[in-house]
Image 1: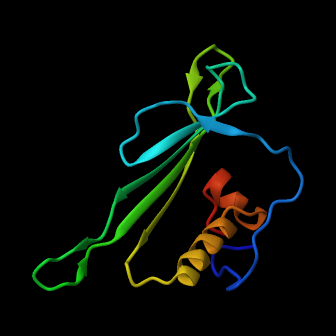
Image 2: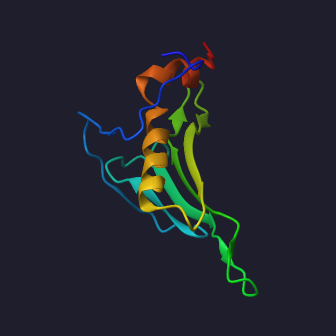
Length: 134
């Protein structure tokens, strides 16, 4: 599928088929506003994948007006360390981030998350891998 124009289903269902369920468990790292979890099935600390979930900021209630100002911003990041052929360790990662306002409904938040997930599907892989805009 081309990026220009692209097609994102509204109300579509995102699901994963196949693969092996992998348990990620907290590793005790201090994460401001969040938690870090690691792949418990990988005993090699050098190549163990990790995911960090955090709330970066929350919308604030203005005491004078009684209205919320700003947005709530949340982020999830997945890191999959790789040992390169020359022995160096690098840290490829992916990051998902949303910014929402207090008036967003649950349905609106889920629709945003579902469409974000769709942007990682096979139709968009050439962009992620090569930067292709075609």
